Amino acid sequence: MKKSITRILLFGLLASLSAYGQQNTIVFTSLSAAINATQTQIVVASATGINAPSFSSGLAGSALYVVEVGQTTGEEMTVTSISGTTVSVRRTTGRTTAHASGAQVLVATNANWFKTKDPAGSCTTATTDISPYFNVNTGQEWVCSAITLTWVRNGDYVLYVPPTQCTFAPTTLTVTNTYPQVGASTVFVLKGISNAAAGTMTLTCNIVLPTRVTSTRGAVLKDITLEIASSATGSGVVPTSLGTSTLGTISFPAASTTETASTITPVAAGSTVTTVSPTAFLSAVSTDGAFFTFKHTYATAVQLSTDLQMLVYTMPILQSAASVSTLYTPGLFIHYTAPAL
Image 1 (cartoon, helix red, strand yellow):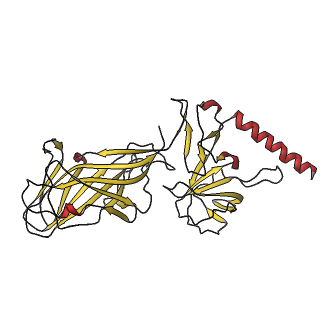
Image 2: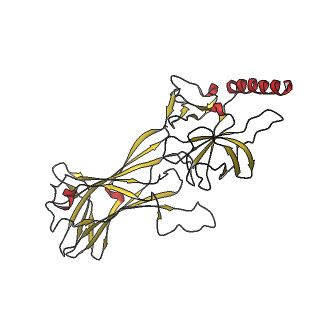
Image 3: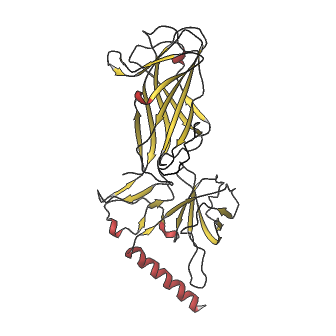
């Protein structure tokens, strides 16, 4: 018994010394299968960095933090054993909950690597003991910036998608697309004019965000905000109804002497979409250069940091009358969160 206590104390001392002698890295993986609030076995995509406890050496099992993509708080777990990518865990934090397949798993060799307070002040990368610094109470991830020598964290960002990345695609009618300046403010827009027929004008935009390329805890979509108007000076009528917007991804192959071509149909992303839109858009035209705002949020998180991948956004606008319709849009605003540069 005395030897065991001595061994544990020695390990604690060594762990404390290592915290100041080297940088310890929290690694990331994900759940390969959903779990409920009581399961004590999880399956992960990669077991790299996950360690089982060693009673002979007094080493505790790895500490895990499981959090849904796009969420801020999750659940701490302690590894009790491991076989391949199947990990047995102890769930005693009092905040047990179900987790979906694909939820992110942060892996720390020592539970002390997970923090409960945000860092503050200056820092130096050479003496920072943990990277990234992760606050389990807020879900915030921090790193020591080698540029500013201060702690920086994930931030909120916005990307403007110009009208030249968009087009109106017709269904059962024809559409002429141009890119003029409109209104007294000479706003540059995409202008779509339909022929005198009933049908749908579907706005389609390609989106590529300037984010870090990473498979874990990268940029995550918050919402897509569309600016659009039915022209006051254009011929015809206002739209009669709105369809349901969609969001999908197209993944391109890596350059190689042998490749499989990218899929033609975008892969659906974001699950259920919730749209906040003004009723005035369907009842009145607006002065050229003035626009209405549509905001789309998504039921499941959409990660934006995958290399060679493009988002495709669509918004169908329906017209039941056999009449010309003219629509203007200056583009989209993409709101997202991402690690600070």
